[in-house]
Length: 419
Image 1 (cartoon, rainbow, N blue to C red):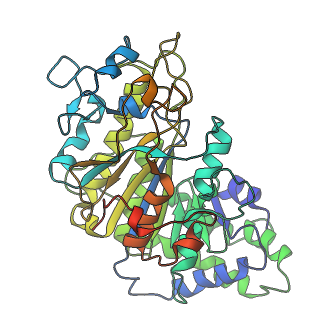
Image 2: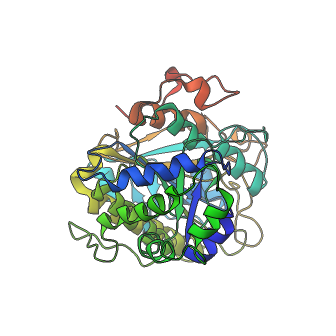
């Protein structure tokens, strides 16, 4: 299958690790789904957001109770709570960047938790390598073919799974969803449902024709039927969706992605894993403090997540949203009033089953002898333990050794953010 042709002509990416042998089974799932009248019922859903570029976790979740924070960041530090442009107080020691104030209500209702000083034990400062390690779930090892989210899907696969079981709201399939478990990448639900329907009418010029030419023996005449099943997604009514509970999504890529994930959840199409991303976090120059570059990025980030949680309301009983970034940034601001590539970072977890209102993790401090290599926030929680807790306690993944090869994942290392 020519995946680039899919993306160029329809905004759709269908992937099963690029193996043609697996693709026909995936398309048969669509055909089967077209005959499903009752939907897939309630499913546990894990929504992941990747903050690409390494967000500054120390200004996102502010350690205002650590005096070293203000010594290290004379121009970009977030003022303490109750001061002008001050942090949103969480527990007397940590606070949210003021741009994240829309998340405060979820903290107060104990639906939101923070895991600080978390990340990869690998010391790379390469964006590419660190993202690959986090998405594959094997820090320091580049030979892993599949992604951790795909392995989670493989572990709980069933014969009647939805073809929309794993969906990425991205132009190309993210590394974390590579693998044998079928996954879908799309940038727009309307494009998926409507453009796909248009292209399937033309066997000569549409992507169905391209697919059929490459799968003559394995798929045969069933090609028409399987591609027509894409219209199953129209149950989500992508063009007519109206958020509930007064939720207002920001008109940004992340806002649109989370709104469409909410659509899929409400449509009962069997979604279990969703992926979204937000970029621009590489703030080497003029990062800003309570206002400026980072503040603007966090304003959109917080507004999108708050809208998602508000929109789903009671449905958040079955949904957990988890955020991540490849690494954090230096504790000390640089000469350009920004921050450079660091180490440990902060993660958010949102959901009605989350034991929120708490910052999880061990805080070593920001003094020189407490920092990693004398410059970065020290790591006290391996990201794989965070991921494993979500996969195990929320999705039902049992074999943690298969979920994270080359790592002795153990439930005793879970931080306890899920019941």
